[in-house]
Image (tube, rainbow, N blue to C red; front, side, top):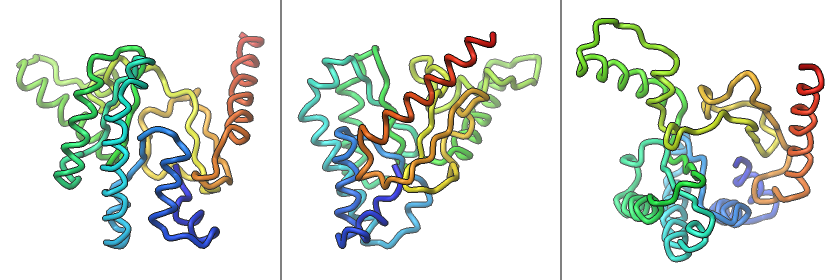
Length: 216
């Protein structure tokens, strides 16, 4: 979900309005808010926090939509870094959807993949010490089970889409990107990203899957 600021400048809007339009483009409250975003101007960070709280409250007010599709909200990152008001909104939204089990909506805010992996390894070590295990090996599945995205036995990541023409992962979902994960880079800014941009990505992924089946 990249390009909100550049979208705003291109359309002669305030940066805060660009972020707001980005939320509207998704039609749901999900964000990839990285640690690096705290380095932005104080005004922009404050606007992002207000927007996050506003959309979380909006999500709670329309919780029947998530219930209809059985979607559970899972916050991925370090919510303790967020203002108290945003933390309360996050907790309310999570609690409101905790009974749903058909799908999981990961809200990454604030998030960094290296931090997630470091915390997972730390949890593995603590678990090993607590259980007084004789072996000291930490296996891939041990780390995977401790990731912030491990809720609900998540499936492998099929597609990762980065908007705004930037071709880098920016410390996002590095562990979750497996050998078959398809990386898609779109030149469209996130607020302008729509079905016309999304359909070619899905078709390209389907072609890849069908090609692999033909040669198996």
